[in-house]
Image 1: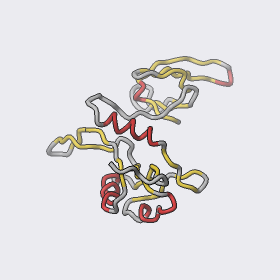
Image 2 (image 1 turned 120 degrees about the vertical axis):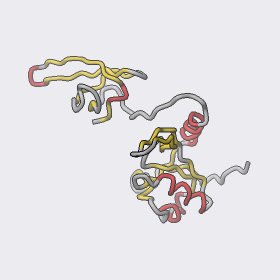
Image 3 (image 1 turned 90 degrees about the horizontal axis):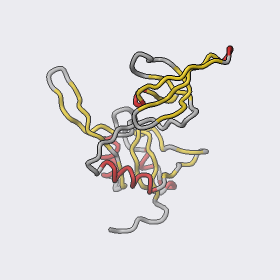
Image 4 (image 1 turned 120 degrees about the horizontal axis):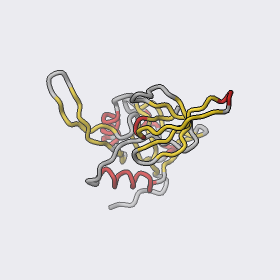
Length: 169
């Protein structure tokens, strides 16, 4: 395997909704190394159900290129922009994408989850507490402990919900 040129790095390409596969195919046709991690998911139509590969990170595709030569990437149909910091494309450490690549290539079960840190404000998206906003105190693979507070009177209550049901607020 050829070693990539030192100025080639991985970048996150922000794409239009449901254009991830199209963008990946265009990048590959333009001879860019592209990575679109997917997960199998059942899709339901009126007359049938089918298992399809769904993007693990909807709205994003990853590509390896020289940031000084980003125009061909930006010209792909469906590309919105390259994720940038202070106006410059922000590179992704290769080890992070290698880890994701290893996971999706394995037989292990995995699910996308929001990156939420303890202390963050979160919203419950499903279940009897749908719409409730609280502070995340603890989160493990299955449960999230939230604190709901009434700041004016300095009181709070703690509740445990399904970890998959919360998202950053």
